[in-house]
Image (cartoon, rainbow over all chains, first blue to last red; front, side, top):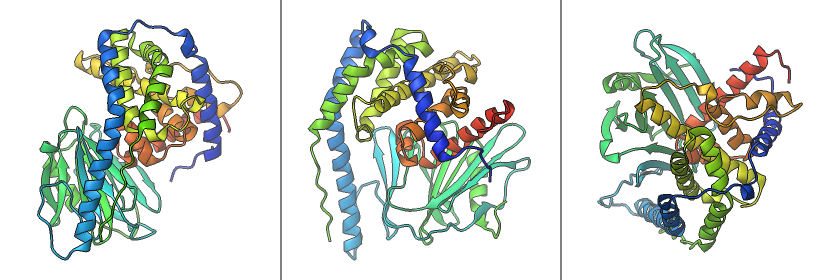
Length: 232
Length: 173
C-alpha cells in the first residue's frame, strides 16, 4: 500500500489555500459583464424552471421504486411489472433516468471485512500496476505494454452505495458470470471502456470490471474471479 | 408492509438555483473562457455545469460562501476541459494535460499547497472537491458522473501525483 508523506488534515489545509488562490486569481463576479447570447439565456431560463420539476420527478421515481421494493419484501408472491427494478433480500434497484443508469443499493452491509477476490486469469502481457484496498472496497488495475487496461474492483452492497453509468440503457446486454446474471455496457462516446457489473447476492458483494478489451475477454476474466488467501 | 415516502416540494431549491445562477454565471463563463477562448463554447460549458448543479443542489448549503464559489468554478473548469478535450479529439489534435485548466499562482508558504497547485487539473479538481468542499465518494461520483469507486481511484491517483511532485522537488511536508 502506498504511503504518503502528508495526512488528510494536511490535504484539507492545502486544499483551502489552493482554492482561495484560485478564486483570488479571478475577478470579483460583480466586475465581470458579458453580453450573453439569446441561446444561453433561453437555455438557462428553461433550466431554472426545471429546478423545481426535476427534484419532484426524481423523488417520485424513487418513491415508485422503493414502494415496489417494499411490496416485494412484504408479499410472498412476485409482481410482474415492466420496470427496471430488481430486488431480493439484498435490496438493489436499477433506475434509468434520462441518459444515466443508476444502481442503487439498500440495507446493511453483510460484513465488515471484504473477502479477497482476484481474477485468476488475465490475457498475456498484463501486469498489476496499482491496487488499493480498504475494509469495504478492493481495487486492482492492470495494464499491458500497449496501454490496454483492466480495472477490477468490488465492494459490499450497502445503504447509500450507488453506481452510475452514462449512456443509452438500450445498449445494455445481459450476460452471465458463473450463472449469475450481469449487465454489460459496451463503450460509447461517453465512455472509452466496456463496463461489466454483477452482484453476488449470497455474499452481498457487487463486482465491477472496466476494460477496453473485447467483451469475450472481459467475460473470461470475470468468470475467473475467485477467492484467494493473499492479495497480489 | 408498505413504505410511504413523503415527496417534499422544494420551492427553496428553485430559489437557491436561481440565486447561484445570478451570482456566479458570469464568473463561471469567465473561468470557462480562460480555457476555451470562445464565449459561445464557454456558455455551453457553463450550461453543462448548471445541469450538473441542478442534480446536486442539495450539496450546496450556503449560496454565498467561498466554498460554494470554489465549487462552481471547479465544476465550470471541469466542463470546459471536457469540452476542450472533445474538440481536440474531433480535430485529431494532441492535448497537453499539464496545460489544461485554470492557472493557479503558487500559494505562498504551504509546500503541499504549492505542489497541489501544480497538479493537472483533473487531479486538482477532485482534491479540492474532496478536501475543500468535503464531498464523499458517492457525492463526487454524482457530481463528476463517475462511479464512487472510480472517485476513490481518482483520489488515490491524485495523491500519488502529489507525492511525486513532492519527491521530485525534494519537499518534505
